[in-house]
Length: 467
Ligand SMILES: NC(=O)c1ccc[n+]([C@@H]2O[C@H](COP(=O)([O-])OP(=O)(O)OC[C@H]3O[C@@H](n4cnc5c(N)ncnc54)[C@H](O)[C@@H]3O)[C@@H](O)[C@H]2O)c1
Image (cartoon, rainbow, N blue to C red):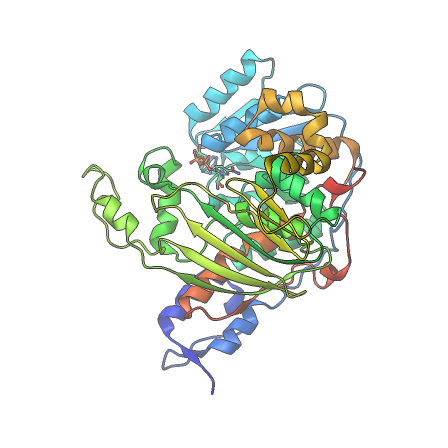
């Protein structure tokens, strides 16, 4: 029997998928019903593009990468410092932009004190366009709120620039396809700045996977559990952009910090792929209760219309049969964790704190001595060779600096980047797919195949080459 969904859900799903449903001819009946199966089929369908694959894309070496930065709020300011750390030998910040004059000026003054004088664009909603149209920019880095990621990335690529965009790269299925199709049409890099893939613990695990310490990988658990209630209601986000998503959406709104490293452990888009997910959200209670404790003049004071459940849990099945549990919770008073658990036939790792157990070493976690032996033996060399620079520049324990270093260094050398637009799309699309699953009662939702079948070809991650 064909399962039906209501007009309300259909309208909501149309927003999640962008024009995807409209362009594929799916519509509600006069009774306001449409078939779930038909709708889900459309969601995973390819959106044709006119370009060619950017898998393994290389561009001529850029000895000094000219960088333009958009968005100088909390994240953009700190990341501008990381880029500055590579001035003048590897990179130069030629232009910066923020809609707010004071933010742009503050970063300009800091850069000027240290010998850089980027051109400043500020004051209007679309000042960034003028910046992106400049000739002396190779790479546009985007640190704005989520709503701007896709339009800014697409426009930048169309202006002949490479793009590095914050997480998540997009939050609709249509947005993910736009990034993929534009990168293919323009033959430009579009890398999502998933810094957690460069953590010392994550790269150590990745290196152990490469060296077969885990045997056959079977399942993983990842999360972004971070109590950000105060931040959500506070005034540090521009126009409170983040909490507005929690008013409208219900799913995993911030999937990539936990999922990105797991995708790399599991060779996603390089021999395996995410096939489908199911997702469930708990009731929403924390934001409503907390909203009663903020000042009455706060726009979000005493609201009961938050949509996002306190905890969202999703299960993803990969084409090779692996399973990934992914959690999202920004509101419960519990300690920070990304879990970072990985299971194989020969080993199991769990983070927070990091522990390892091996099939031939008993039933307990490795003792401190043995653990350290494994830690040292399989540490990714970049964390050793660049130890001093990483300590100096830091950023989330050093992962931010390693991320920026690898991005710029690969462009300097004309090498493919560590993460490509297909990674950006398949990790980010988890957001809207979880929303669809939650909206339809936790039904399985198939992933679009952004690589159009090329995921089957085994590829070695750049970060694992020559080590
Ligand atoms: N990877 C990480 O560890 C990490 C950490 C924090 C935030 N982030 C990501 O960074 C991004 C920014 O987050 P944030 O906390 O810095 O937010 P924020 O609100 O502090 O900063 C966003 C900035 O963009 C500017 N902006 C908005 N619209 C603009 C426009 N049209 N033109 C130019 N500038 C515009 C705002 O003025 C603001 O300064 C988000 O995507 C977030 O998910 C990533």
